[in-house]
Image (cartoon, rainbow, N blue to C red; front, side, top):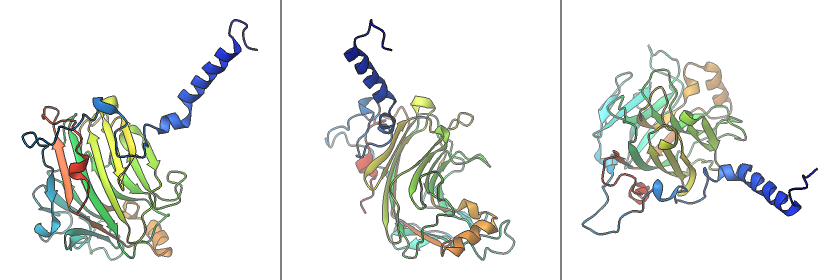
Amino acid sequence: MIPQSIHLPSFLFLLLIAFCCNSPSAIDDERYTGSNESAFGKDTIIESPSSDSNNPLSKPKIWNWEQVDIPAYSWPEGTAFGDGLFVDVAFDPQGVTHSGNQLRFYIDPLNAPQGMPSDFNYRSEIHTAPWPIDHPLGTEQWMGWEYTFGDDYVIDPTSPITIFQNHPGIRGLSPQIELELAALDSPRPAQGGEIQVVNEASSDRIVYPIKPKAGDRLKVVIHVIYGLGKEGLLQVWLNETLYYNRKTSTVYEDYPWGGNNKWGIYHHTFNDSAADVQSSLDIGAGKMELFMSPLRLLTRSPDHPEYGLDAYNLVKPDF
């Protein structure tokens, strides 16, 4: 029964406000805006300066792969290359190679070199150097690149595959930020192959309706401020649409720093798991080829005069 002191129209109005404030769409709006604009306004992404040539934005570092040599390498040594990058494979010494002005990442789980601690190849990646890099809290990074999935790529619903990660450098700890190709129902409602954004520092695993197929291209832009709680920020654009957009923790509370960025293929369930490898092989998956365009990366400290300025157009992949 409605108390007599409350008029019916006022009561209904209060109910409507309560419903809207607690509805799923109100929560989702801070994560998915369907645009390439910030949902947080000027307190987070400050308006860019004018195109005055006397006040240009800093330029990101660009790695054009056809101009970068990759020395011979093996596991576990890997190799430094490209002024600030490092090859990390387990265990194929041809897992990361050139392909014109692209990098080629390749995984064939079978035939790991003799003497390896696992029977299966499971990683072909590059990462920023040095390791660990330990970006201080408040460090801001913008990065952009494009992936092309090989013509023989087969979606694998039996196993998740990481294609980007930021790792704090603590052995045995999961990456704090990832882009992952989802496995079936991991998490629901993934059918397998969709892109999910993983922000482990905030316990987020969110699947989005981007499902690359053989030959498809995936444009990625990531903007991160390494911080705890509302001091952190993570924005992820996929194919020029902003999907993940949150002020939230982007580092672990016990390890409060930004980690090394890693690109390529990390098929982590293949690490010494014959059953997982066989499940992939049974559906024609297992092998995977991924190509990466030139990479753009911009890093700013909080005292940088352009800290917080929108750098999307400086790093977006348009090669």
